[in-house]
Image (tube, rainbow, N blue to C red; front, side):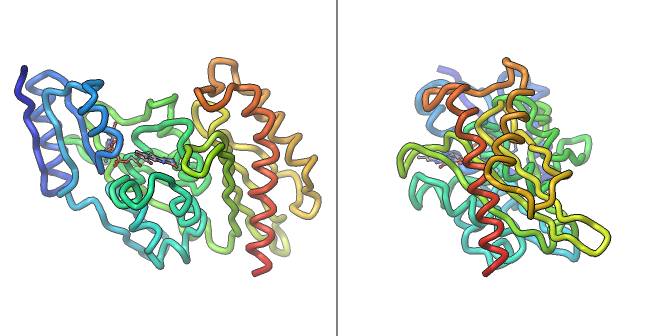
Amino acid sequence: MTAVHVEYPCSPAAAAEALLWAKQRGGQTLVVGGGTLTVAMLAQGTLNPTHIVDLGRANLDGIDVSSNLLSIGSTVSYQKLIISPEIAKLLPLLHRMASGITGGIQIRNQGTLGGAACAARPFSDAPAVLVALGAQMRLISHRGTRLVPARDFFQRAETTALAADEILLDMGFPLHKLAGRSSGYQKLKFAESSWPVVTAACLVAPGRLDVQAAVEITIGGVGDTPLSVNLSNVSPDELDHDVIVRAVDEAVSNLPPDRRWSDIRAGTEYRAQVAGDIAFRAFVQTQESKRK
Ligand SMILES: Cc1cc2nc3c(=O)[nH]c(=O)nc-3n(C[C@H](O)[C@H](O)[C@H](O)COP(=O)(O)OP(=O)(O)OC[C@H]3O[C@@H](n4cnc5c(N)ncnc54)[C@H](O)[C@@H]3O)c2cc1C
């Protein structure tokens, strides 16, 4: 049995240093956020790191709002998102998504948005919502920080733009771009407690005198990364079920076969068949939230 070196850095910079220190010594390093995925894998022996960097005390659990940016630290839990008045008011899409995470109060208290992002599971709720909201992922290492747009952060199933010696510091949301948009979030799952099969996040930007209203839909669970559906040339008034389903079908059919997602819950064909309907439901929700 080999000894495992565990670090509890007390700041993001100390976490970056801990990763560098571990890298210089070789072996496998594991970053732990809330631990809801990693601790189970450690217990099962699927992960056998020589170094563990636990971010639980690294001061990454803040939600900060400035004039144009809302920033969420990588270890902010789902529960913190659910009870935050700022999130409910400024990012209702994220609030709705977090409120629908299953696993009960333990997972909502312990599971983090950053952990879900870094795990990059195509069948989880977070990736498509982060892409839909135009999140900027801020990464830190001993070299400094860098920003990666969410749409570039998710590269393949369980693969992100994070280098081995980087951690996700926080996620920034451009409030000036999101202001006034109505949002909807819908998912298909087979049981109350199950993970999603297909998710759809919809944002509608209001029209102005010289600018047509715009609808953006991001689908999760169909490709190995979130799929954006282009509806920019259609006015929301002309959007009905068939138009949305056609646009989603086209986007899905443009996915290369090796980028389509399937898992134990559903195959690629089934996901493709239901994606349009889920997207339409998310759009309908945007119209209902506008009327409230
Ligand atoms: C019972 C149960 C039900 C669930 N239901 C749902 C559901 O309905 N929908 C859904 O989408 N998800 C669901 N999940 C998944 C849940 O969202 C994730 O378990 C959680 O968000 C992961 O966060 P964590 O901080 O615990 O991750 P961890 O287990 O700590 O880490 C996960 C991965 O991310 C890496 N990591 C974590 N933080 C960082 C960081 N800051 N920088 C770099 N790498 C990092 C770790 O190295 C690891 O690879 C469920 C999980 C469970 C156990």
